[in-house]
Image (cartoon, rainbow, N blue to C red; front, side, top):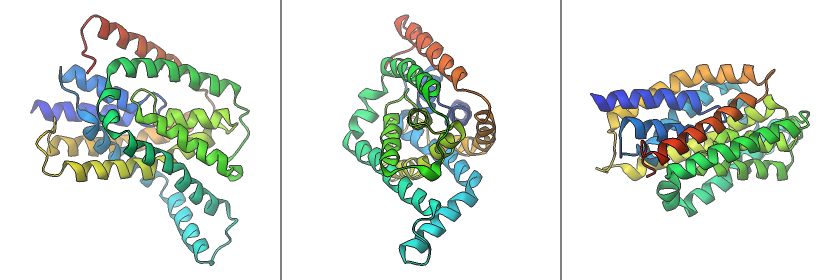
Length: 277
């Protein structure tokens, strides 16, 4: 029964942190270590429950996604204007998804092993927290997705790939890039959600395929499924709240939270309360 409790808690943690620029993988890793001392829930578990939160993104942005895919497909066969902003956005999401796929495959062993050290997580929480704060401060706050260039789309993708390192944050990386390039907070957040769908869903189902028949799972399929369902339901609420929040507020609170969590994590590791790996 304890495994089910752990999974439920981690599902809640995943939903509360996936869309905020504070790194869901770091939180799942930390809480997992606290609840299962000496046992990392694993990159597999993290990838699977992220399917739940990305399913929430698909449901929330369903109309936008259907419109983008429909117009992109029609433009591909000459039945729609290829200059349509949504057609262009479809191409940009494809281009922006390439870096994380390529780098994820190239560095798969490190991502699932050495890079999951909590010392690295603590450092990334602090360093990228400060970088996100700087980006939010210097951003011109005026660009929209309609005017995104191909180069900017690729930079968004490279920034998203930084999230392969726990502690960076996928949404934090893309929002950081967007703010540095002058995109408004709502536009950067919206694109962060849309760009994540191919990479996160693909990663999740690839992890399912790799783990079929595996006996090395820390948490079984039942608890993992529960965590995924919880992350989906609660994720819908968090998406709605976050998009409302960024319309009028800065990312300052998330910056300070990341720095504080990183420092606390250093203390817990230094005193032996948590094991780094």
